[in-house]
Image (cartoon, rainbow, N blue to C red; front, side, top):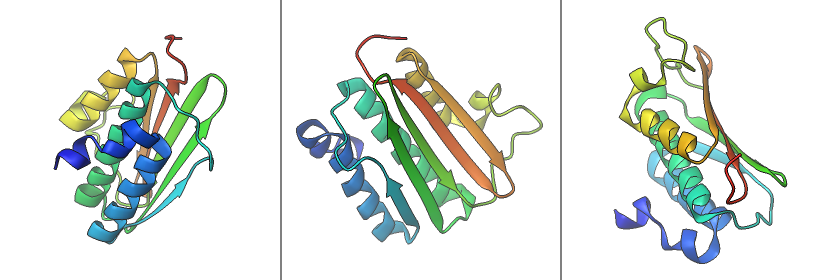
Length: 149
């Protein structure tokens, strides 16, 4: 359990190796095929950014397994000189939002998503959730350096 919450690979080798290992295990445990796309050589990011991105992948995949009904998920990481962008997409039934905008009503969607949003906000980033009957995309943009934007 502690490995899943804070994998030693994250501190030792970085986000890329930690994500590859986690996604491989999730794929095997859940039966959900996960396509992970990211730069082959992903540079190290600030520790808090790496941890936040890793936890968002964890939370998003668990939500897909529990709620979406999707048998496939795509994870895409894009990194430029100033920003890390993470997208986690599924092809399931979408999130019911009780008529609220997902962008404005994220806290009504559950503790896990609310926690993700707060952590991203503390790091000076943004979290967006787009959802319809064809699936859900969680998109996170975080500063790729120690300084808040």
